[in-house]
Amino acid sequence: MSRAADPYLNVHFRVSTGEQPLLDCAECTGLSLEVATEEYHEGGQNAFSYKLPVAASVPNLVLKRGITSDAALWEWFAKYVDAGEIELRDGQVELLAIEDDAEKTVRAWKFTGAYPAKWTGPELNSMSAGVAFETVELVHRGIRLVES
Image (cartoon, rainbow, N blue to C red):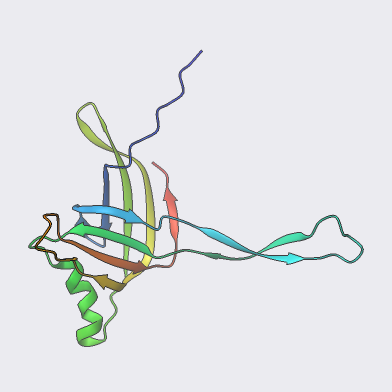
């Protein structure tokens, strides 16, 4: 009898946009797809109703990272605030596993046409020590699983 495969840990991942790796992201949420449905009641059928697919929707990708000297996320967002320019980027989220002392991509999701829609700075509090995080929400046109 073969043993079931262990699931991968969610602590090793990499996010990149365009040519720029965002290796220091601490959190990435929003890897989700949903198909909205509409109920249809057929006349004379009272036991159930049909649920028909209407449209797919995707939430924003939310990237959270500790602030460093690299201001790339801020600069990408500020292009719209400063000059009214939206720079669309394609990107990828990769789930990594450590095998034989090397990182290996075990699952990857590509997103297309992304741009930052919200930037949130750190919560600063001199009474408690902690990492200063910034958060950026990316609007995008969809996510696709990449075959490994």
